[in-house]
Image (cartoon, rainbow, N blue to C red; front, side, top):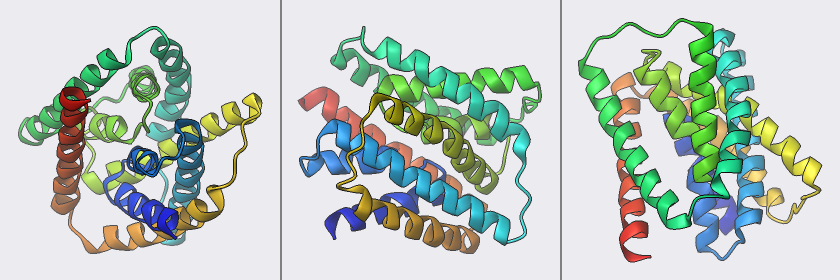
Length: 243
C-alpha cells in the first residue's frame, strides 16, 4: 500500500506539471531501501503507464495531439539518452550532484525570465531534435526522468502555454520511456516485484492528474512547476552539502 501511495502522489504531480513522476518516485523508493536498479525499473514502468493513460484520456476528451514537437524531440531524446548514459560512467558522483544543482538553478531562472521576456519560438525541426537530444542526454547523465528539462525547453524555447507544455512533455516521455524499457528488456532485467503496486497507481495518477489539470488555470500549473523545481533544488542542496 505504501508503494501504491508513493506512486500515486508522484504521478498526479507529474501529470499536472509535466515532469513525468519518475524523478519524484525514484528517490522516494530509495528512501524505503529499494535498490537503485529496482527503483529505476519500477519508475520507468510506472511513468510509461501514466503517460499512456494521459494519451488515451487526452484523446478521449476530443483533443488533437500535436505530433510535430513530440516526434522530433522524442526521438532526439532517445538518441541523447545513450550519450548521457555513457558520459555518466566517467564523471564522479559528487561532480554529477553539483552539476545537477546548477542545472536546476538555470532551469528555474530561465522559466521565470522567459515569462517576462518575449522571443520567437523555435520552429526548425533540426533544432527541435537537438533540443530533445539535450534533454535526453541530461536526464540520462543525471539519472532522472527528463520531465523538468522537457518542460523548461517547451516553455522557454517553444513558447507553449504551461498546460500544453505539460501534456507534450508527458507524451515525449512516453516515447523516451519506451526506449528505456527496450534497453531493460535487452539487458534481461525484469524485477516486477513493485510493478504490481506502482503501475495501477500510475494509471490512477494519470486519470486524477488530468482531472486536476482541467480544473486549474495556466498560471497555477506554471507556479506549481516553479515549486517543484524549487523543492528539487533544496533537496539537491542538502545532498551536495550534507552527503
